[in-house]
Length: 279
Image (cartoon, rainbow, N blue to C red; front, side, top):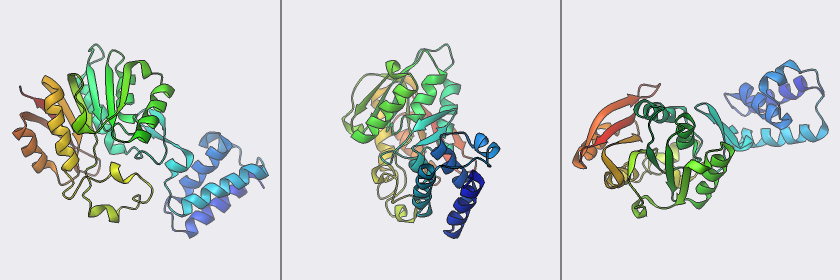
């Protein structure tokens, strides 16, 4: 069988199982199986596929037809300008989280030597993307999950910045190391009740999604910790849920932060708050 035939089988399997992205998913899974780019795949559709590769491809299709995210199947995901290793112990990076990278880079110039803390480092895609753009900066990252810390350390090594970052297993409440110029966080902000309506719930780590009964439990912990660890005039950049802006602005003001800017995502939802510690 040639690669075109394998693709057609993949298209049909996923389409019959109501996977809306059946075409791109099939192409990604076959490219990953063959360890070639999607472009090279398309240019070589008349080439034959080996029995071993075909069975491996069918195994991946079977996982996808039950709605396992492609990123977990191929163990990688593009974010910002880079590709990151992933497994089911960390969240899959979302495009809206790139706003945190973009806003951080606006605050820190290429000539600044700043110390950054990421609370809830997950895969490390956020802080690693920033450090690759700002060569003079260094960072610490914490996560309550031992398995997430392991993934973040793998990515720090893969992207050759492990000498500029220290990664710790720690709950936000128990971390009291150092003072920082900037704190960033994309904490869990989905309320417990809404989690059951998310299609990825059965695959992505529950603790990385669950923001408590009202969705702001972890966000508030991040604000309180940032108020303790930030230097005066230091910045806090956090990602929030679409209906949490006013509640979080009020909480930030109560904890001695001035809200500089609210960033909306591509869907028009309030997604990112940039604030400054006043004293």
